[in-house]
Image (cartoon, rainbow, N blue to C red):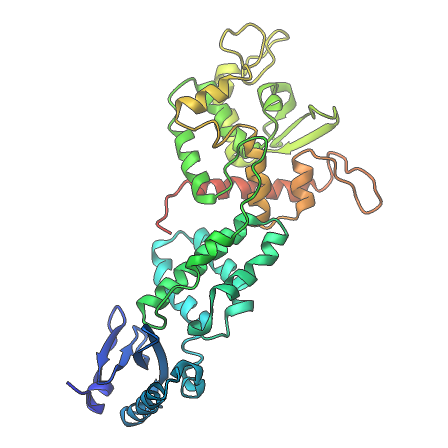
Length: 397
């Protein structure tokens, strides 16, 4: 049945977009916001296409039919109407990538934790919108999406490129659902992304996978000493040898600091302790806190023979929990922190490298000492601990 102007004018918004059909492939789609856009569905070279014909009531039913007729005449002449974008200019803003992306984002945020929402919005605003935001979503192709990811890959931010592509893919899926496009141009781009070279120590750098791994560690039911070490490892991301050899005398829980000599360089180093790390150590104090000259260690060995926990203890614990050896190691938390503090929390690389106890030099070529940037590093480790807590919360994104 052909549409009437009264029917279009009285069409009320619903929870989801819906369409009212006219004839010849012409229809109006009514959005949850109340906006109404004219669309024409047609086939060209055996492929289904969509073209925008304007916004109601700026474009009336009569005008939409006229534009539909013009498009049909182009088709009869063997011309694809989508190459004639004059009729789509009035609707360019409503179908821009940024408009569609923000509409999708608003539909998803009620089911997301605030931190995840802010991360998704940051990826859109920092990476996708500058390149694609003003363009009509129907005009964006795989090459355009790949082009915006190339600078990230050049900077070796492979995980960020992957996450930005995932967000774009979801936006285009929403464009399919709301009938702005007939295909998802992000789909073939995944195969073109550079796969990072594996590191010597297996590490998990995908935030969702890190959350799953943390939940697995939380479910450990073995020795409380081992459990404490497993939980402290991601919070401090020190070398495994430094974690195992930690001594109570080196820890000041009131000042929330852990001081020791770096294994490789034998230089002094400070690890600011987050509130979560302090809580773990305070919980362990009744078990191993009565240190002696013979037993000064926080993580005592199972035989309590004056030696710290063995180097295989944590590895075995992770294997018993189902963490595959090629997936993640205790040393891998260093790579996890290095990647996510940079790509997800956006801390300056020199702060991250300094906290990793790597050799970092100032602009004059001098090595930073252990107290350099300590307030900033303290803030970084607290935000890191809070971020890990948030990753533990499962999302459906």
